[in-house]
Image (cartoon, rainbow, N blue to C red; front, side, top):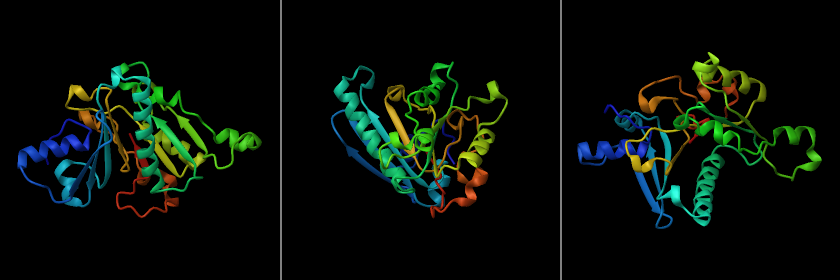
Length: 239
């Protein structure tokens, strides 16, 4: 397996394609241009050969590239948000129904700018689980129960992220985790301009070779309730 220094499945596929100069069994790529500034690429790893080739588990990896996002207008930002929303919704709906509980997890250190994405997203999540439980009369019918947590980092808490999530999941019992973390890329052009979604879980620090335990349903004790049939399990949708 090639020694990659990137979290993006698309970049790993590009590196391998240049190296081998041919298509790779077990890896399928689809590309779609939404507009002049927004492009969606989907990498699907379908078998063990694909897993071994780029060092990612079987599943779907959606990359959304947004050109010049840092200087985008409000209309362009809204368009990009809508594209992200639709892609995330499609992934989530493959695995759970529209009323199932979701726990959103923001990984990273809020005091270090390159690693603060997760906590910053959590600060803007509209949580609904407590409102549905205690004040249901104030909630629109069909509202999904959403809870959110930013578990911090090992250097601050002394506790592995997976250990924290095990305790939360065993009590809250969400049907799906959405795990958010900053990603490593080989291209400076992708900084603050690229989003990757996947249904295979996430390994904090993998892009810079600081490997920790993968966050996915098999690692979380209450996962015995998992009713999915995905070979890679995909209990977590990560971005």
